[in-house]
Amino acid sequence: MTSSNSTVQTLIRSIIRDDVQALSAYHVPDASGFLKLDAMENPYRLPADVQQKLAQRMAQVDLNRYPVPSYAALKTALSQHFGVPAGYDVVLGNGSDELIALLSIACARPGAKVLAPVPGFVMYAMSAKLSGLEFIGVPLKADLTLDTPAMLAAIREHQPAITYLAYPNNPTGTLYDEAEMEEIIRTVGDSGVVVVDEAYQPFAQRSFMSRLPEFPNLVVMRTVSKLGLAGVRLGYMSAASELLQEFDKVRPPYNVNVLTEAAVLCLLENAEVFEQQAADLREQRQQLSIQLAALRGVTVYPSSANFLLVKFTDSEGKAGQSPSFADQVFTKLVEQKILVKNVGKMHDLLHSCLRITVSKAEENAVLLKALQQILG
Ligand SMILES: *Cc1c(COP(=O)(O)O)cnc(C)c1O
Image 1 (cartoon, protein in one colour):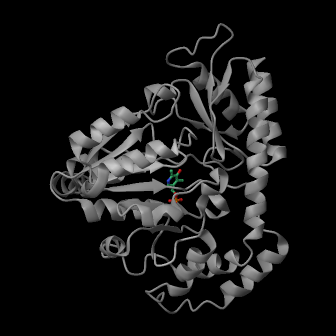
Image 2 (cartoon, protein in one colour):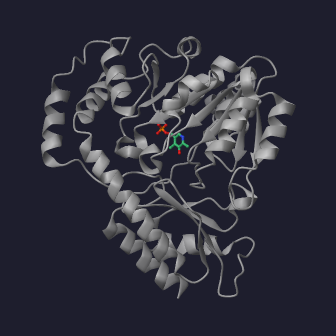
């Protein structure tokens, strides 16, 4: 080890938080050359005429200027297009990942807690811990629906500042029961906010957005990522305006860049393209689900998102330990240059499960053919 290297090691040990040193970096596999069915991306490219309109708009952007900090035009367009109720504002984030981080920062009072069903979206726990909040995970039932009595008991015991309900949930695809969610929101009451994360709204077509006026402690969070714009990085959330103003105080003032702003404004004018794609993906989800369920040893969980959670067992109906049967299927898919997400180690309830993004018909057919061959 060179001396500069050992200085760096000393420096790291003396200044970087122990919990941060212990973390491993968020790993995103290199997917070049793969059929990419791991990250819930929309498989479609923009039609040529929309590409041209977008290019023209992007060329006119004042790259020399900071964004106008009110983001008024973008907020108005998002609110109108996505049905934010009258009198409700939105806070914008560099993806909803950033909004989750802002919520943690704003609520990080000493002893504050974040609660969510598990398995759930990993950023809830990650972001809570990085801001010094304790994370409480409440296991879902074996069928991956909400364990509402356990949720209510945990809420009463821990009084979480933030409760997350992904509607539908990732990585399970489950659309929680609406009446049970209402009960959770009411039970939390004025001791915390409930964030309903509607990242998959285009595929679920169910939403709490219009119900904001009923629940003063409700935050509805959305993103344009799963709709087909994962690359532009834009999330938004709405809630009672006084509450929203507090969250907005911890937002870096120029967190959404001018290219994102111009691109989303242009693309919302052509929103029918994305609506059509979402409709096609919903139809593909239905077909792929039936086709996968017909394979030997495959269980497909009900999904309201653009992915399917699939459990694999071998010809004797066994899931196996480590490697699980799904681990073996995953490795064979990788050999065939198909990338899905192996979620088996995330939680006991996901043992021997893979999460597969629903794509367009041609790509789903490639996956299905590979699985038919692997499973025999
Ligand atoms: C993908 C996803 C997000 C993150 O969306 P970005 O806007 O791309 O950061 C948030 N919540 C859930 C449940 C997701 O699956």
